[in-house]
Length: 230
Image (cartoon, rainbow, N blue to C red; front, top):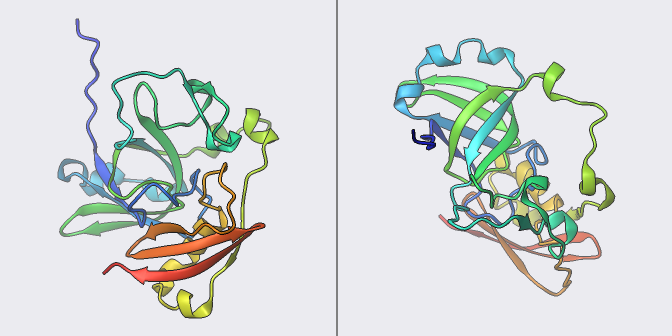
């Protein structure tokens, strides 16, 4: 008897993140970000989504498609610990797992029934790379999924780095208006690796159709250039 489990994508999510750098480290941290979940034709019929509008949030089970490895490492270095301390892979949310499966909670903004793509879900707060394969979608249940007194382990004893964003008006004007809030929320999360703190270094982040360059000094992130990639 085979122990293999056949899992295939049911959808792909379209986001503004074309590369890993700059993606919020957890879902919901940039609530203004909108994303679209486009389903494979066999799963896009309206019947499969009956009553989904009644839920405010959804769980996305997805494939860490760029983190596939053939060798197993029992420990990882969480960014929250500065990248220099190892913990067990099962005590982390690292993408480098025996099975590269992720879990993300997003807000359901709308359900669209289209002629060309069937049913499409518009969600906010996603922390996924553009075109990430979605393996399943499940409703978030407040009475079961929210545990008020839960412990966050080592994440509670290490301060999360954030930044005050300075985005000059002439540079912000180059960004499409509907994408400005989400971009600023991502920058406020301070996308730099936690072990880097060079105030003179210029960082580049691709967001939607733009290349954003910035520097950070004493908790202030200043955008220094915006280049359109279109």
